[in-house]
Length: 297
Image 1 (spheres, rainbow, N blue to C red):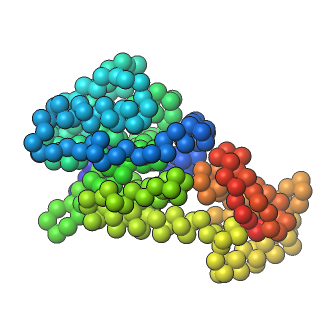
Image 2: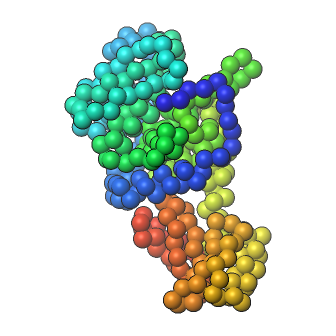
Image 3: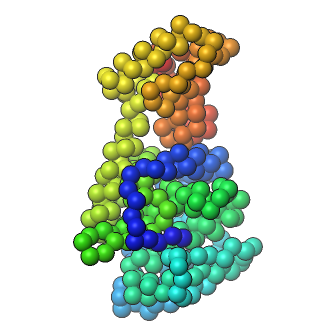
């Protein structure tokens, strides 16, 4: 797990984030994802300065293991000087060895965040779910941690002021906010009261704005006027040339199909691409997550 004083902002990893959410739904199913509807609560992972370092760390680790619905396994946690924030040794179990950076001895409020990421590595290992390459695999881990209800801890570990800055994980703060907002929309849960970091709250707000804008893109019926006008122009061009593949101005594209021109676009929940005939107003059901979308194709 990366920890860095260099904080990148914005949304540079969204393609990989979307692929991670799609992969999670394919591996767990909508019912499996729904089993994580409640986030881990602050009281379950709180770590006071007067708590014993090792007993407190074990308590928080057990809470995260239970939240991520892993079988009871002994988490052996050690602290040492290291370049990264934390690491986990992935084996067949039943014990898992986690190392945390020595700085967490005195920054105990962030131990839960570091453990959440590493224990999600254990979950993904057991699920057999991974992406090729360290960068993409770490983005997968951050995304799954957030989407399954433990990643608000990672965003809350983000702090940036005139004296110091800290961020855990590979996602930007705004990308963590984006995933958390998508989860909030799915389960009707607002994580913002749990943030102790003002910078985390601002990043969540920015991520939520991006997530809301993604849910208002054509061919969704909720798209704004400008988007609808662009879509109408792109659709007209596609209908005039029905045998060609044409990219639109958003995430949608037009392609030939057995039933005429089809539009393809990502599901707003799982981001799997949906293909439907261009026939006007329709209610479309995603074949992966079963979300029903009101569209105007």
